[in-house]
Structure formats: C-alpha cells, structure tokens
Image (cartoon, rainbow, N blue to C red; front, side, top):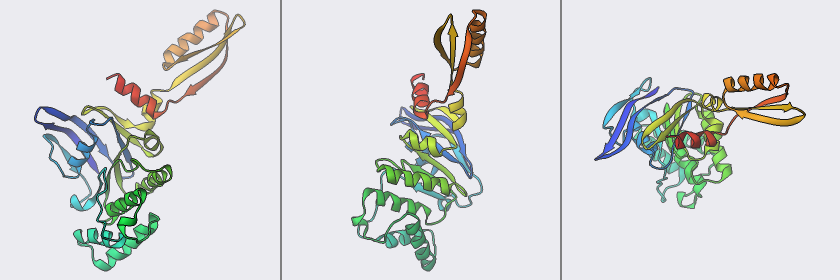
Length: 272
C-alpha cells in the first residue's frame, strides 16, 4: 500500500536521508525508530507530501487520491482553542468534502471511541489533546496512517490506550509510526525500520530481528563443578557441548533468552 524507494533528502550539504527503502502493507504496523536527527520526521513529511525528496520516490497503491487517504499526526499538536471537539472535527471533515450531517455523526463516533467529551479544546489535558488529534486523522477514514511520536510525553495509561487503538485500526489500514519508547514498538509492531544519521540499518520483521539476536545459555558440570556457557551462535553452542562431553562433563540444562528490542537497537546502532 505504501512503498518507499531509494528515498534521499539533502539540505544543502547535509544528507538527512540516504537511499532508504521499505514498505508498509495493509494490516501492518511498522515502527520507525532512531535517535533524534536520524531522519524519522523527514521520512514522514515526504510520505505525506509536506516536503519533496531530493531523490527516490514514494509509491501508493490502492489509495486513489493520496491526500484524502492519508491521516497524518505530527509530533506536536496544533489545535484551535476556541472550538469544541465536535466543531474541530467537523471543520476538518469539511476540508474533505464530507457532508455536515455525516461529519457530525462520525465526529461523535470518534469521540466515543476515544473516550472524549465534547468540551472546549482549551479545557483539554495533554492526553485529551493527543486523542483529539488522532480523531482528526481518522475523520475522513484514510487507508494509511502516519503517526509521528503518537505516545510521546503522555502518561502510561493514555499511551497504552493509543497503542491498543493502533492495533485495532491496523485491521483495514497501513500504519507507520515513530517512537522513542521501545516498549510500545515491541508490543504492537509487525516490522521495524531502524535509522541512524539518515541511513537505514535494518528493515524487516520485528520477531526476526529479535530471533537473530537471541542467546543460548547452557548449564553443565565438569569434575563436579557447576558452570554455564552463553552464546548467540548455534554452531558455537554445538561445539561447546561436544567439548564438554569429550572432557567427561554432563549437560544439565539449556535455555533460550530473547533480548528486548531496546538492547538489540542499541547494539545495532553502536556497531555502526
């Protein structure tokens, strides 16, 4: 549904993105992760048409009018304080030529889904403002959602609510979101894109990234002394087992340990 091909962006002599390639399909949540300045926001702004790439392109399939089929959530909420929630949502619905009666019904439906009341926006808390911004991205029922730090700076309860909402929304949408909180990336993403200084270090399934970084812990005894051996290589593990047996030792147990995404991320970034 969304395909990024050789995406490159230069600002004078600064290379913000360097030949980035990935895709987001319907029914997928793809997490875009990286340190500040890695190129996450630049990538998203190119996808939604706010800035143009220096090279490469973005392909959209099965979406028709691109602008009408993308819901974009910037990192910072920009709301109209003088409006109430319904007025705000129906105003944006009008920009997509949605009839006022239908827009009102959809706005009420979204407020209910997001546990929001139709109050003056100036009275909203930070978490309520974020939810209203998300409702604005959904008012025209887009097929692609591009969310920049949707849970950034929010309390744990609101963050969890938004994460679970994205899991529900992915049933009929393609979702790309950026986050610094690895817990939410690990809990809801199907795939991840890892950027560092504009370069893509990894793109693929999250479970495969975790799997190739898992460790084996072997417990054994030699001459009555208990010990253990840790490795991430199955070949090295097999060689060690043979060595223990040759020395007259005994294997007493083995377990696999899967690392957290945060550990894998830092290891990958530090190696480049």
